[in-house]
Image 1 (tube, rainbow, N blue to C red):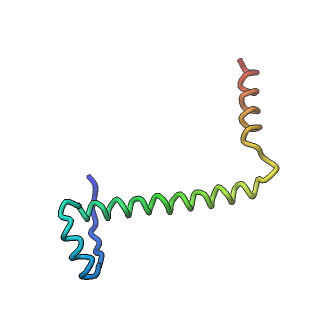
Image 2: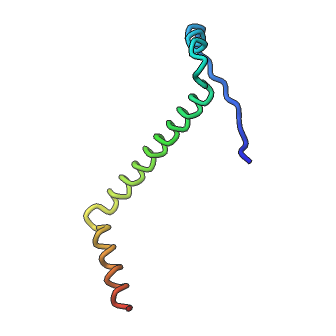
Image 3: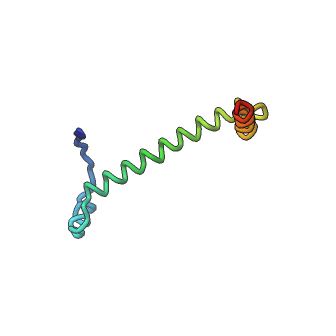
Length: 79
């Protein structure tokens, strides 16, 4: 079961009047999707900042490619 919350958005009378002209648009769904998209964008920004921070800490000392090779070689020796 998904719990839903209600939020309110204020728009000018002019915007509301224009929205009424487009009765085929589900404005609540449109706004819901826009909010979800913005949340994903902001989460990606945070993830990128974290990755950049980690990359700075290991710059020049650690290589993902080398690490994968090392573990593949170790796994190959056990067989």
